[in-house]
Length: 103
Image (cartoon, rainbow, N blue to C red; front, top):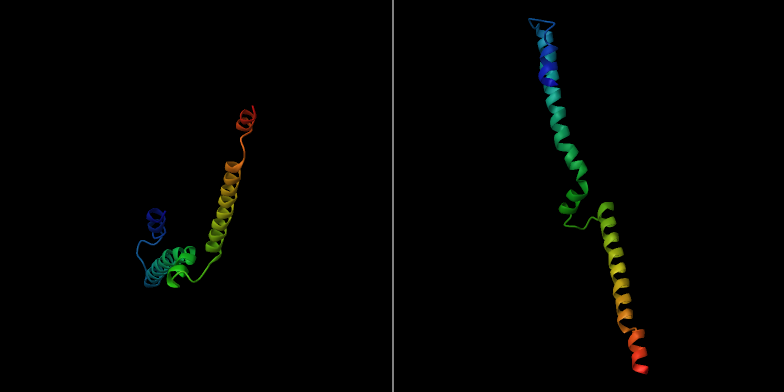
């Protein structure tokens, strides 16, 4: 878009006046500054939880981290329930073996 639109906007004036040239220079500088700010600020903002975690050596617990930890706790509860079920099942008497022992 910029490769075509930017030069096309300069065609109405074949020779730039000082004011028109100043406008294009200021516009170029603003465009570059805004693009630079967006390229630096947006990624840092999107990964603020990771940045806070690194800078605080893991002491800051963000919402995402807390949700992850809560998920791990739920997984541990489920695994404990499965393990206890397996233990009960292992201790249960097999009805087929019980019948054959009686005869």
